[in-house]
Image (cartoon, rainbow, N blue to C red; front, side, top):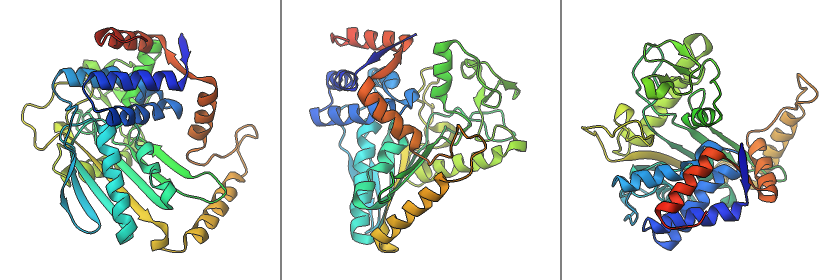
Length: 358
């Protein structure tokens, strides 16, 4: 069961919650827009359903509502940003803007972030580069819930990667994906729906395949993209490891099993090896490689040709990365955003905590 809410209603409520946590007005507004961008694009696991998680971390003293976000090291084309324990929803846009500004001057900009928190969907941040005729990249490490290929221990996060590439007449190419077979948020949705998980998503604490969506709370682990070695899980493991190293080892954040968890059933590591969670952002000016209009015309050609691929089934054409999310955003802006009843109850509890109406 679910209820449908207008985007503006969920956005305003989310902003009021961040204000109640003590965030400055501009940051509360930005954080609500970043968080709700997930719901608009159909990524329900990373949107308003996560709001109570941010509140929980704030109550535990793990989120600084008034951070001093700043550059602590830089060269003409690179920087390290210290998020000062702030909402990743605010730290990440700051860092992505630094990457864009550096790319405007140097051709490319690369920024690694430490001392941050969960930053919503990676695609939001990568897409910030599109309006400047730039290619954007965003990635982050996350709660250690993933076992490496052949392993039992939870060592990595779902560690998403997003790449946004501008086109001309065609919509932008936007790839945004976890480096696991499925993100933890997808398991949370299955838990709310009381449905089993597909084979290949998770393993139990002994390393055996499982379809129990509650397996993580019982010591199990998510699986890298591919699910098992025969289906290429070593490649998903490598992708997740690259994100972890770029986001955290490079910046001075916590990495691997030391990454501070967002999920409530894991405690922060007793002996951290860095500061907070880490992100990594990149921006590349297209005209640093070839004339922007020429490139975008060829992107149109690339996209058009792939759309024209002969489909396996006539009722399912070949899609371009970003198509489903773009169509979902248009639909939900018009029709509203469906919210599962367990999430509604969560939001009502948050509202009561801060004497707000939902």
